[in-house]
Length: 342
Ligand code: AOF
Ligand code: ZN
Image (cartoon, rainbow, N blue to C red; front, side, top):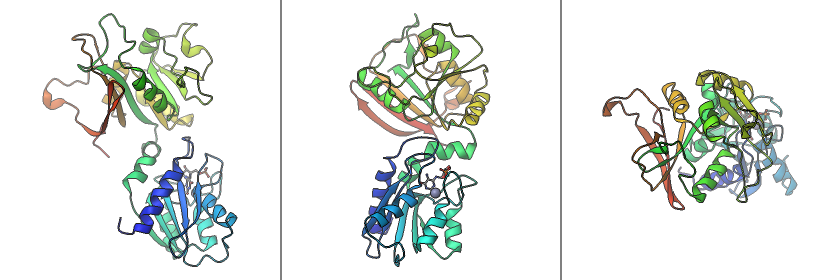
């Protein structure tokens, strides 16, 4: 990015965006700059149904005493392309034009058919629009943007395994492979998804609660939807049926069908926690967008592999992923990866 004022404003807008909740709507931040590049207003989106970031930032500028009738030389720097639709709130393109903002800097485009296209609309109205295509702005809305592009929830596959790739011992026991720091990381990441999904095999074998809990083990007030996929019934006493969070049982073996049902319910991101066979079915259908692997420095030598059969018989058949991160978590390692396709 060549303009240091835009660059600093985008840094700030990204920080503001992250203050917003992860819901059905993306996190968006906006900074309004005066003619000299000074920050006049800051805003972020606080969740579906509330003001968009641009409207919030203009309102903030007004609240700080800046006259919205005299906006000559003002710019707006937004992490996501301003919407051009009337959803639960009005179009941000309109709000920016009404305020007379002459220049708009966009971090990443809005890929949705209804809201997207605001940049072109602003340009047509004579606004100087710069689309930065900033990697951090893209990353911020990635699951949401992918969900809309593919019209299905974005899927993150999470597993914990020994260093030699086993997620359970031969007797089926798996508690615990990783330590408390890695497990706390799982809870934090779970909380960032609309739904947590397992197969009936895992539900029956492990009787997981799949809730998001704090350090003391208490469930947080806001819980992702718990989803079980598969044809077998859950026993009446299963923890998934304990009422501590909403649970749906999708009686299908088809990942695509399961995701279609979840999309209809408004789910845009899914945290897939196994088991190996269901995860393999998602991979075979090309339905995994991100991988979070927690690896413990332990060896089993035999046991249940973290992932079921992908049909690979030769090393050339290996599904090669792009490494996106790796770091130490307590006594374990987290590895982040994703398929290379766009
Ligand atoms: C923006 N600024 O701060 C956000 C945008 O139903 P609504 O009115 O909340 O609109 C939701 C859509 O608007 C959402 O799907 C996305 O395309 C866009 N989000 N756009 O200009 C914002 N949050
Ligand atoms: Zn908007």
